[in-house]
Length: 637
Image 1 (cartoon, rainbow, N blue to C red):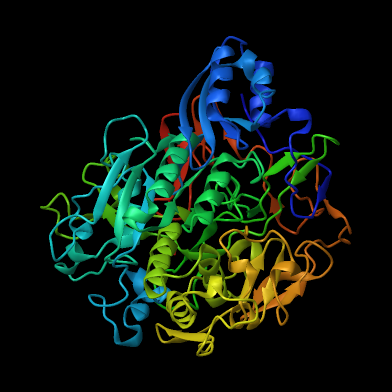
Image 2 (cartoon, rainbow, N blue to C red):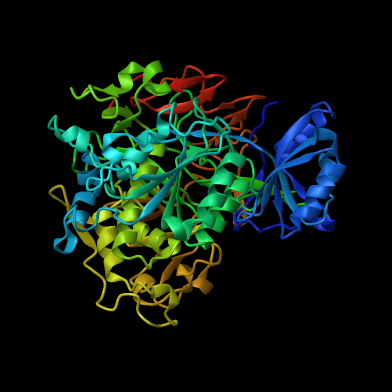
């Protein structure tokens, strides 16, 4: 069975409405509906069932009556993992209280110069603080949902006690192993919280972003980087349940699933929204689908859960190996927006695309050196990924290089840990707003490539420190910045970096100091980012109405947004005209929109990219094809 993004002629450009199930019947994902028609009725399928406040015992009894079994119930995200004969899917959709049914799809990993180029090294010393006594992530816990973490790596130890800062490990794959035989998760953990100690002895510095933060090792991908949506749901459910005990403030999701369903129905997106509402910042990879197999730029490749408006979705930049930021470019592989996840109106049959502007921002993600788990699958299969520091006697002191939006996501998660240490009262929406507002607009790339711009950790931490820790609870009209806003620029690696001072909000953009000087309802944990327009913001905030119509913000130039029209033709007032193949052909944008065969799901594996497709940066995980990995094989700065 091969699934594809549906081709349509007319795309509605309002934010996607949350269509309710009509007549008490739950929605069924398009790929599941196809499977019920093509598969043997007696075949059993694993399903992720979204409940709408239903009694789980009642639903479990009905599942058993239909010949199925409930494998797990995720209480905090209100979903179930069910195994059921294909012939019973229709009957299950009739059960009262079930909102949506989808397959338990596969997920996979998407694939310190960091401190200097991002401004993190400056953030360490803000206000006279140092890495040992100030902003270093101390007291903040980041949950890493990935292929596992090597807790014994030297860079993940607490220097004072000698104990690992990986304070809890849990396996959600059923493998029984808590370690990281694949290697991806350990690499991400080092980007977030490695202290670089193993590199100091050889005159290098591979320090991560928050070198004293604690980590939760929640293993959701197996020894080949495979996993299921249900694994991730289990892990997020546990993070929410134990967030106060471990002081878990951030979830890192350097993984991806096909964006088949709208964020309204997508199980991962629903879980992300629940976590955000619980006060946890969720950082997700944009995906590595920025090019087709011929190297052409494509749009619309954002993966799940990066399609969620509640997630901070991160694309990748290439720093070209320098500390200065003026030569940075968007990594060719980094997925571009808008989001092409969609749903079907049950009354009219019309396909409605989410069309959210993503990514939210970009961060370094090319040739990133971080921790290597000794004898992991990645380096064992591709020895060139190992970084020889001359300090390889200790098996827990190794490094390797990888590229991808997975790495960029880890960079932002570490930055968020520093922000929350500086101001523990920030809500997830405030964190996202600060990251966007202080980001540096790149000269050239459009909004769907760079989002609000390049991560600026120094600016983000400085702005976070200036805001009231109780800002979300202040009455309307009271300032969030009692001492005023800091100067909107940073000095990083010898260059003056102007802040973009903009927020992407749904399909629009916001500008103005009043975003922070006046309490805005948008910073509430209960409000989904980007849903709603003027009603969430007070006076003094300029709202650029629609990124998809006649005049809107698109291209960055000289640290300002230009107003241009995408299509060489006349944009339609009610939507954009898409070609049948979703390939653009001048009907949408001057560049190609992602084609409908870009995301493919086979019977037992997920294809991330193209078989034999050569990439641009060492260690880029293009994805999984059958039992193997597709890797970029060329090095280019």
